[in-house]
Amino acid sequence: MQTLGKILYAFLFLVLVPAGLWYWAVFTESIVRFPAIASKTSGLLLVVVGIFLLLWGMFALRKYGKGLPMNSFPPPEFVAAGPYRLFRHPIYWGFGFLVVGVAVVTGSASGLWLVAPTTILGMVALVWGYEKIDLEERFPGSVLRTVLDLPTDSPALTTWRDRLASVFWVASLLVVGNYLVLKLCENTPPLLGNTVLVHPFFENTALRVLVFILVMAVPIFINRKNDLLDWSISAIIGLACSIFSAIIHPTVGAQYLPGGYFSAGAGWNLVRMLTAVPLFMVFMGYSAVVRQSRRYFLLFSLLAILLSLVSLSNSQSSLLHLLTSLVIFALSSHYGAIWIFLKSTAEEIANSWREWIFGKVRVINHGFYIGLGAFLGILLAGYLSGPVYAWSILVFAVIVIVFSAIWAQVVEGSEKLKRPFGYYGALVGIPFGSLAVWAMGVHVWVIIAVISVVMPWVQAIGRLRCLVNGCCHGRPVDNPTIGIRFFHSRSRVVNVSGLKGRLLHPTQLYAMLWLLLVGLVLWSLWGHHFSAPFIFGQYLILTGLGRFVEEAYRGEAQTLVVRGLRLYQWTAILSVMVGILMTVIPAEALSVAPGLGWETVVAAVVGGLFAFFAMGIDFPYSNVRFSRLV
Image (tube, rainbow, N blue to C red; front, top):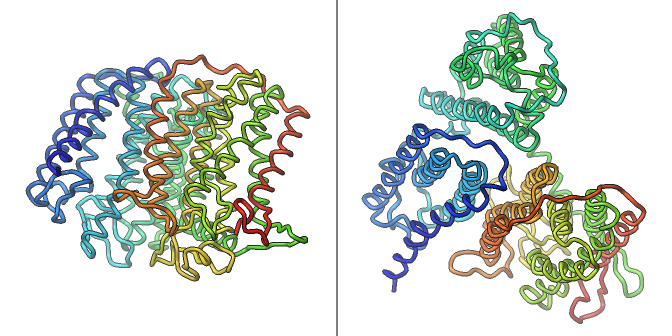
């Protein structure tokens, strides 16, 4: 029986998944309107590298792990040899290179901008949502340190391996990011126009290459591992923010195209583009070096000014470059302090339960969050689609809330949980809500698309209710930098899971951060007039991937575990699969007349009050189904 399972597993991941990805790219080629990158030489090189890493990683697991590269039938031995000495997850790296390479060889825009990123995100979700945890449980105490690992968080002296590894990851992301921004934004004017604030003297390719070299040389001056780790993470976060902003808003990304980009030869243009250093990278380098030694403060300050002028010249809009760099630098260089603030705030909210009893009725403060979320969500959805859709949006919202209650009652309902709510019940309610709004005579796909756009924001606000209520809580964690504590007796953490005072993963906060990113992506798709099925599909895919990881760190006692995965990890996988199917449905781009009317405001108020009543008001002295929230 185990042999049959291995054969089916291999057939799934070696045949069905690659074939499915291929056909997904084919069927969505006409939908994805990003520019394709076609190069047989570069594509074949990526394919060869990908296949090599795949085979090398599989061979290492077979030779050193005494098993097969299968999560359902994992190798019995911990592997730290072969490609695993160089970097982690060589098989996934190989498959990622392979998917990107095939997209470049075939010149497939969908393969490059849709299939490949989704595949890579899926592999990251699998690692963080299953493999990492599984390895820690099966091989406690085993630590894998690779050549390309970033430095550890310790005050020990840095080594040249630490420096080279940091430069490798930062420089690679910078060069790849520059190329992606070039392809995305080369025909897009920057948001603030061609504002040039520096002298043309600094528009020199040799100077720009010098800036690249000097910024990448910053690790030479950093003496402690923790300081080098801080620089590396800050740079990676900053570059990720820069690339992400270019993807969702190309007019912002267009600032990074070099001034006079089209005036020189193609070869020099490529050098100018790939070595372009955003201004926030100069700020980070200067800050890191000055913190190490103030002996040469004046010299480094003058050098930083020179590098900043060159970096500003390396943009079509110097003003926009300066403004965005200041924002990105402030966020990425203070990521640690920002996380502590968010985590501490989450813990305060988690212990802020308040309730008021009026006769047989109880009002709980966490209902205000969900009421506010529903109000803002319906208001925004009504504005984006226009007043004509206001009442249908309200009906749709009410139906999905009702189904979320029915779902949770079936899956989690108990003597302690009389009126729980479940997100996947809301998804089950979508077909029923669609039938209702169809009967009202409105365009169903418009409703589904606009609800998909606003739902991540509504869910993010709703997670504040989860913090107060104690639902969706995390499992125990030993790291006080990560964990939060729950103390209130009403919280599910205390009265259901029995984890009062324990440090827990702030999974509600994890979800909020991911949902904010998803919301920006979907907002961009709506603004670029993608089809409704595609927007809905992307909502299911992205929220499904995030939920798969989030669920792995949850610790709710009532959640079932099926074949090593929590119940909602399986539903998350199903969400991703359904989302992929949605994206291939042919449909015309949406045509709506956005605007805010009195109907939208009234619908938003009614919807907010209904959500507030459903999730914030109960009957504490009753024992019937749906009576009590706690």
